[in-house]
Amino acid sequence: MIILGVDPGSVITGYAIIKKNKGQENCLEVIDFGCVITDKFATTGERLKKIHEEIIKLIEKYKPALLSIETLFFFKNLKTVMPVSQTRGVILLAAAQKKVRTCEFTPLQMKMAITGYGRAEKKQVIEMIKKTIDISRFDLKKNNRKKDDAFDALGVAICAALRAY
Image (cartoon, rainbow, N blue to C red):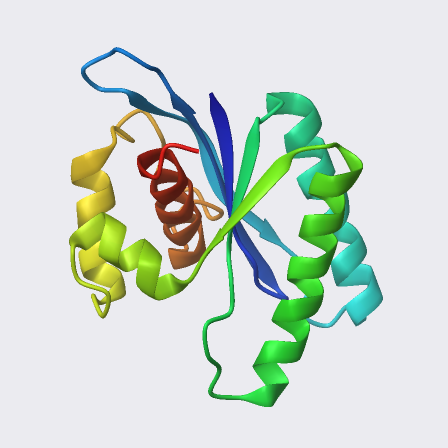
């Protein structure tokens, strides 16, 4: 099963493509991961259009059976929650247009699944992801892979794989 994990952001949206191979010892394989990076000075509409188009391209290229997306659990700043909600909307729209099932996880659920502790720091989550799934063949210095958002997307994809969707 191919799973597309997405960490939505209004300027940077993380994505990860993983494959869950049943019956194998190391059943999770990373196919690709990185970020869709938009111009922070672009209009909201332009950023949403780019994110939508890039998610569609990922779906068409990898043909995931499932899209796993990080959901908003709580927010500290109304200025942040609105653009992220809009981004989630275009991502969910892309999945619906391409008839891809979706599931959603809060950051707390993802951290709990990856580290066993829902309040884990970003650094802890990244280290556990590196221990859980082999990413050694990827250039982590590449700009769109070194962002936390790419690792959050890997975490959301792994979370979906562990939940046996």
